[in-house]
Length: 173
Image 1 (cartoon, rainbow, N blue to C red):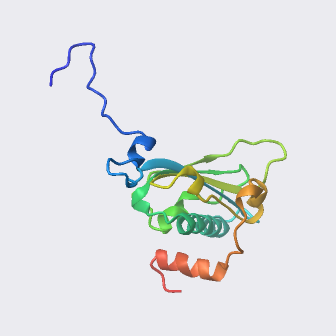
Image 2 (cartoon, helix red, strand yellow):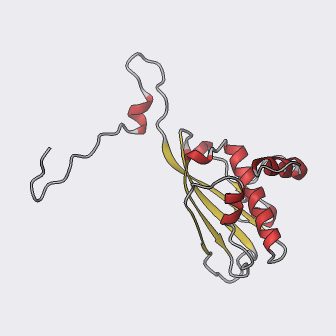
Image 3 (cartoon, one colour):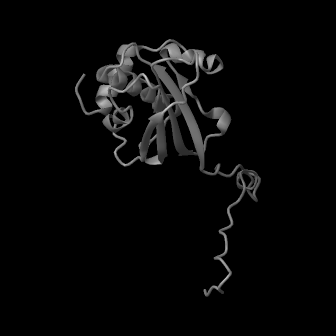
């Protein structure tokens, strides 16, 4: 194919989500894979490396397990912390859980007077067939005040969650 000076290559034609869900024989076709945002937030009591990593691993573990996220399907993740947290990069917790090839970025959350202190947030860009309404966001500890409408799930068994985290990190529990 040759391009003239002011032309661009033709755009690939992708079916819309509505088109992709209908098939010619009347059966439901597989849903398209779309990039969805999965949010999570948690807090720590003090600015310590261990607390930041533990809280972040727990938050990510909840997100992974509630949504059945495979790291191979994660496009990227953006972590933010409030300016009172400086002891460690929360992205290290994702690396500890095996997100070795996932692009990760850390930054500061906007400082707004009266906002939640010692807070770690994440936005995971995940390639999935789930609809936006099927995504389960995870707000833990004091961060539940940020989105009380999204925190209606049963109490978490932290011992079992920690055992799962240690298995993901290749450690014996």
